[in-house]
Image (cartoon, rainbow, N blue to C red):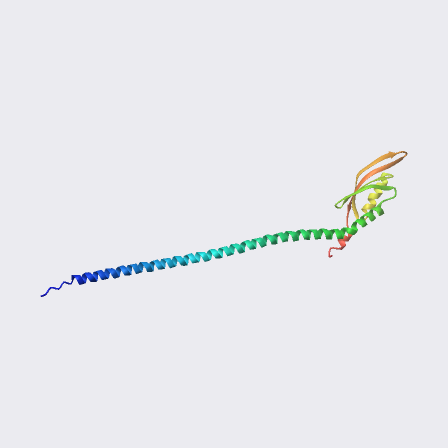
Length: 188
């Protein structure tokens, strides 16, 4: 039997298989690298897109916050203007009251009573004056109590002084101002 040496053929086939294996291994590494690189690229792209959306949202939020502060400022300005309008409206409604008040004080003033000063704080009115006697001050208080525009008269001070042969009473009377028109106009 003749001897045929198959070793070089087997060795050549082994080398070919090793070479094919190395090519397949390099191909698999390259494909795995491409998959990893593509996956990394996709994740980076998704991260960049999300960051762009976040920046856009932050810009929109900043714009909205600016608008909100502007709206708050406008609300405060509106409240101030409404308060001013209410004050002006109250002043317009109370405008004729001072005329009625002076008219009422002159009507309720009995003979022999003279005013030296008048001071008003809110609805409280303080009358300072001189009367021929303390009974005239009492008459002033009675008449003021019957008035529509004046209520709650109270004497703060009555002091009798003598000037020459005549005696007079210096007085301070406190009254409260009311407004009959305020009771009539709640619907206006």
